[in-house]
Image (cartoon, chains in turn green, brown, purple, yellow):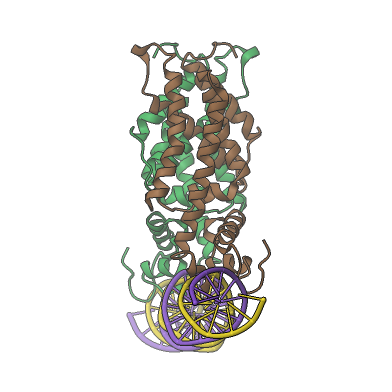
Length: 205
Length: 205
DNA sequence: TGTACATCAGTGAACGCGCGTTCACTGATGTAC
DNA sequence: TGTACATCAGTGAACGCGCGTTCACTGATGTAC
């Protein structure tokens, strides 16, 4: 990855990588285009050969994050098949795993203030990600008697909300706040209780 | 609240109010000390008569938020008594209600990056707030047979996480993202399923 | 294989800006006599 | 009631800073002949 002479080789991706590191370190606020350029061994002006500006760079980092995220969710979903229950649980776990493994991407996606509708590609891949979760919820909802079956989008929203909340409050360094439980256990048990509430798990603990 | 002549009257609180408005409008990133001063009708330098600096002003805004938050939670808890279930559900709803009614405070508390341990008073009032939720969870856990009773801090963490997730993802303008359901319904139904999972509500939907 | 040339990625200097913070000051207020 | 004075909240000018962005440029690369 060392720059070789005047031309960098793959500056575009090097800038995204630098941005991700900086966002992870200092939060979306602390990230500056100039610093990302410096970290990539390049003048700030060089950034404009590859991105329209600061926002554009963050959006690309977020886009790559959604790409990874969607792949991860999809893989988790597949790995649980053909059991609808296993698929659903796996996608729930994948959310937390993603947040832990790719904190820079996570922040760029969910805390940087970049709109998901900023570009068509971004919207597309974000929809792909949430689509996986919804599909998992649909599969699961077929095991509930139709007359008492809530809309599957509601499940996925519930699980998504709980996952997101666990990540924000207890996994990422929400400064000074801490849980007495590991976030994985918290999410696992929370989802367990929830599924029991839907009658999809035996009522015992 | 209009300033009367050279002296302002109650500049300290006016600055906090201005900060809250700006934080609500532009997010914690967009907030600047200078702009808050301007909005209060005063020179930026005047701020330093009342606060050590920018961070200190945000921390005070957050502190006032936690104060209101704790009061609200406490009131909700009391209003549900003597039913443990009603108390618990009311505190869950209070979380969302707070986020909607006091968005500036909410952002200062949870999205500004100010550590809850920044000052002793801040830590104290934050603990008071989460203490209410834990107390509600404790009361509820007594209705579960002891041998299959999870620690009450775990409930409160689950509910807190789901509430926070609903707020972040579906209630506040998480830009471009939207739920097909009103956040209140989402949270209400989510908590309902969860309590059913604990055996604290009848299993029917 | 060697030379001329087009392409274009990165340079470096410059810009205007608003920021947070400092400082010596000034003028309004309220109290003591 | 009137005057002298201490207090201190707010002024306004100044600072150094790093930011994002622009511009004319330069030098490395790779292709055509």
